[in-house]
Image (tube, rainbow, N blue to C red):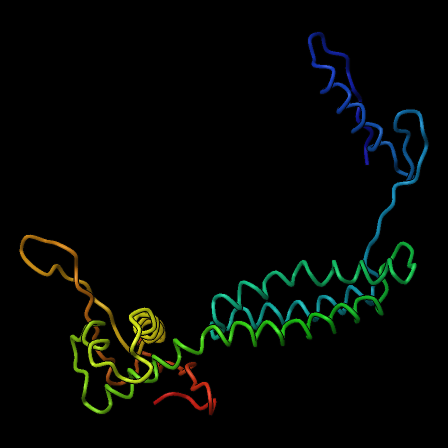
Length: 231
């Protein structure tokens, strides 16, 4: 690293001058030491060992692949994306607890990866529990469609007013409809209720063949109890 030269400039704030001088001191520390405030001290640093680095990259590649499948709930996907930073931080903590020096060991990284796997199981249960009501509502709506109770152009109000099982709450009905639209089982469209305008009404049309953009839509919606795909 090339040394920085600090030039005295008239009118330059003292705080900025001191900052530049400090930066110059660090730039001169090519041997791992620097002189800050007249005191010579080592610059502590930690980095992954080659083995730990390989283990992390292997895990990271698998994580990125899973995050990009499009089959993960958005909330869970956002949660697991934070593990990119969590895992190396855990590895550093493990390394320090074991009185490690300089390079973070492969053992510390393995412990971090094992713990992240354990944390992910809890995260999946937590986020899965919150999504069960909307999945139950979506399944109930599909059932009513197949039974002929709902036809193209139906509204959320029509679904709710029948007081069907799993469809008694307006929020739950809307969550189920949103999920079915997201998975391309339904298409939503909005239109004004009158020529004078007013609040638009959203209607839903059934996708009869389960096709979207020329490709068969993979069913990622499963029943909470059996784990089997919906109809």
